[in-house]
Image (cartoon, rainbow, N blue to C red; front, side, top):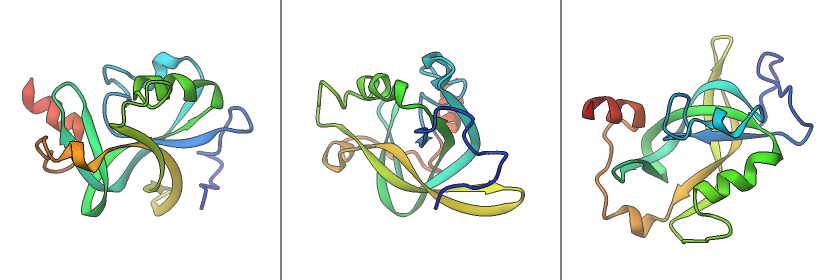
Length: 147
């Protein structure tokens, strides 16, 4: 289900898609999504079921399970998808560590909890096992602990 609320409806290209970001692409992160130009619009805080792993300077998410990964939901235009795939080494590098997939994201709109389908970058489960889990599932909290 896509968000229907006019406050979060895309004001971008008609092919805009929702993207869930959980690490350095979050607002204020080292790869803040706004660096890709005016091709995105913040919907707000969101979460997906999964586990977050600490890879040092960035996190990796593995989907599924009872825990939550905290992040943000953004509308993005197709124009920035290749740059995002390049950053995550999905295309053309195809490192095999990350893949772009669809997730069910949960967010709040006008005090009502809603869910929607969104794009996200998931880490390969086999690679993730070598890295520590970020308890609480929030990369910004983890980065704050290091400061």
